[in-house]
Length: 337
Image: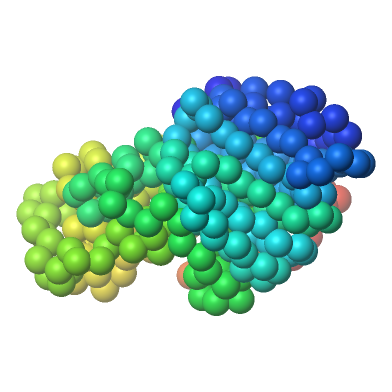
């Protein structure tokens, strides 16, 4: 795993050794960055990490080559907005152009390279974390037979989904950096969603047979899962519920859809909204944002929309009724989104 729970930084380097040293320390990998040819060198970097997911934004190559060796094995993701970048393995190059991206295995790729004046986003996810998620989802780890690199279009369903998850990870990692306790659940959900997406799009599900072949949870296990969700004092992820009752995420998803007509994620969200209503009605808090943060909703506007859809009124109306005459609007915190 990457060292430290949260990292957040931004820098502009002209010295390749300084840049590689800083990024190497942040990712716990030995990373070397060197210009492809003599001349001016610049690397503009903004990076965030939550301990197992590392995001480098605006990787401005200027004809640079980056190599990572003897460090943590990662699943790498690169998307390109300008120029050409690629990865290579034993002389086998895979080049991607603007509006394209790559998912690749850092252990089996030798180097990443970028043409002059290129811009891209680089995401590294700890391989052990991904194999753990694969084991929960499909009852087996990722093996070395999965593709060493897989290309995708940014405007394709894969690319749009990946960019949405990565953007959400950036927002939630930065939120967790500012308000760590309040954002923990949102951050875990985002990482889980990104990992699931990568596992699915890497072709891991191919050849596993029909979903009906998955052994369904027992009635007791489903009941136990519901008890955990209803009694949670801190928000749970689908993975945590599956682990607690001893089934895979995939099996739990199928069981919930068949028995309740909703996914475990939806059931958990409904329970969180009910808890939010109880919290707003209790008078223990004074802002809608406090309720959203405490229940793991990082986006207050989305929380308000979902709350209104379920209860027919905004959370602000519920809070005003609970506080009565003691209600005082807080700038930026109480207005309807």
